[in-house]
Image (cartoon, helix red, strand yellow):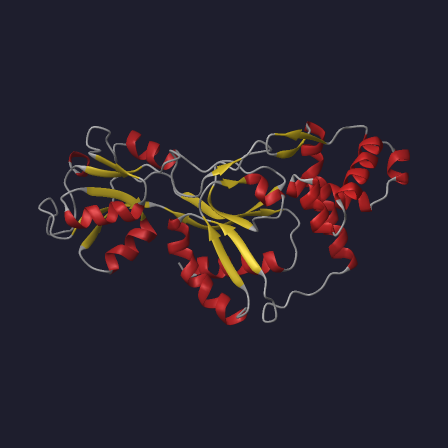
Length: 316
């Protein structure tokens, strides 16, 4: 956009762009802004002329952003958030908020961290709600405000997001406490020779959540299982069973002579219930940095929720 275009641009048109970017529909964008469909179409026409680009084109699932539109979307949303914050800047009061927070997280992350989070959440924000999603998450849902944060381990985070480290996770063997291969010192002479349960989620990755998207991808790590296998901790020959989650693996280990290499914090929770013993591996893959991804520049409720995650992580 050149200077002449910007000086003459009606900034209300950017709110129309934001609504279209989120809803992918002129009708839904109009309902969101309290405008008619024809008013949205007229505003989009003015935007197209000002920016010299179609911005949105019709696709099988509604309006799809062009390359220029997809590039502008996160920047416009971020700019509008900063502008709104500068003009209103209300202090967030969790005790009065009835907001619903939505985060994406795996069952592992939810089991390990959410108990500590919720102890604080229900006390400090009794009217607020927290929804956890763990399936088919889109990185774009952060851009469009349909997710407040995504928690897990990540190989790659696009620069438009902020990654906040929370804790590091390592692995440990889990074995039935009366397993015949377990000696008096609670060690296993050759764990790699025992039949193993290996966790292979449906999307082929490891700890974290599934993330997809064309506009910069948040990738969850696959290195946990690969590093373990290459280091001799897990052997494809001895991996008699693959399951999609840690809870299935724990149930099987409790009732068979199979063993599993699992995230340490989750394994400790399971062992505390009895019947399982943890055995240190001879070689441990590099720990995974677990954390939360949010939109850059967030203020108010999201940093507050993130502070609860940090406090809970400090207690792990």
